[in-house]
Image 1: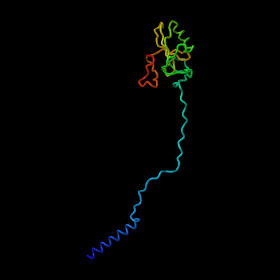
Image 2: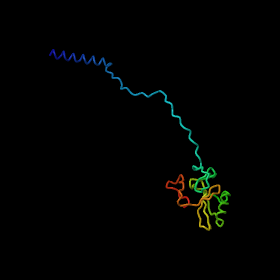
Image 3: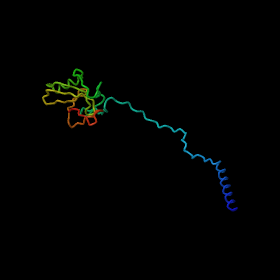
Image 4: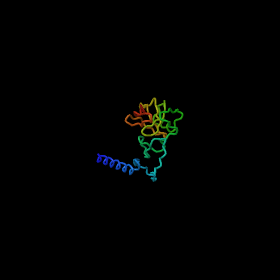
Length: 165
């Protein structure tokens, strides 16, 4: 039994020494990652170009009625789909209609985006060739409605535009 007592005393002493060596039984906290406090240079951002009130224009300078021209295509006060009083139509537009359709009467007008440009959508009555729908730029260029043309969808028109229909 003496042997067992001595062995037990030796184990207790070893346990006591180990506990003392570990800092009175206190376990240090688990190390954690610290954030890097050095400042990193922020990326230089390019300036944002100012938004244009008109659709992007093709500055082609051609006389092709299916090609959008330059800034002359911008119509002051343009609001997609808004009705335009006939008296407010530009003189160039009215003269172009009288020249091409002398027997026709303009029955209605509204603003429309067509062929990627701001235009007046005109409804005619009495044209000898049967034209009823017609688009005109502010400079008086007439653009006939074409079912094969791709109208530009307006912001609130998710399924595509029905301009000219």
